[in-house]
Image (tube, rainbow, N blue to C red; front, side, top):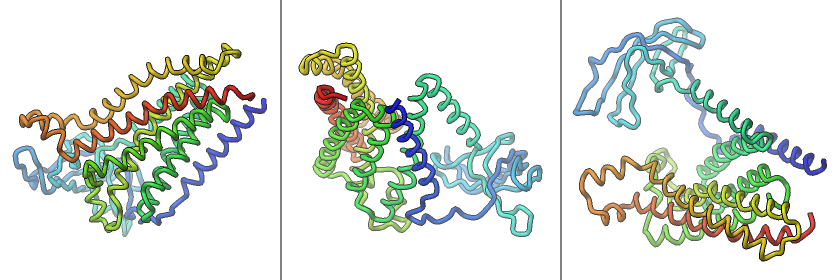
Length: 370
């Protein structure tokens, strides 16, 4: 029973850390503008002030809504929808749509209402609940621990890593520290405080460190800068002029691939654990050969996973290049495409290396007594 108590204690500590992170505010981020936010149903639309240039819409769309929640539920309200001309940010509404509305009520009467997008929060909560149920149904107690690790990772990034970068902490050491914390929490939570968990953690960290080194080297050789990422320039205009965007980009490379690295390391470590369980007397080199055979098969699909993940998020960009008939040399040499090539290849290096490293570490750990 002792190992189970130890893992229960580790999960409890992780839960307490998640609770503490919820109340953490190290960067003293400005509070959101005071106002009331609630659901509203659009009952009428006035497009007379909207200016249309081909497919781009600008100026103001006037809406009449009925509030569906909040202190003024049931009341009608005039709402402004500001159209900036950027299709990735704007939404154009029709009557019958449910939206999120933000307004103020200085004298108890709702005024200055602004549309904040179609209401999606309820559906998001539904998907989160469905995800949690499926995770527990498939993986049982391990699924619960995986879900706790998922929440912990999200909170560490949002409440710790991003604020530390805003405070001016060096991105590379900070990123390595954060990814080490996350790797340890996830590997030991899912894999347990066992040799399997230790092998997963050690193998993952070797792959991540290699990825960090290669990302640093090739980012400078490619002459890339951090402004190739969306919203980087807007961040500078927000007053954070001293941020090292290039190092933030490098940190994003090894953090982005750390999940795939941990996934592969856990697969290998679990395989090595099962082999040892089924054949307790297996020799060191036979154990390693068996693990490597599994590692070769898993590595092949994992590198393809990185390619599809990064390419799939830039489908429209590639379509633009094809539609304009630009040659492949122009495509590959563009800074934002080169950044994604670096992401894919450098991340794949980490994934490839983690398999033999985890095999070697697990084989050595399983030679010792538990």
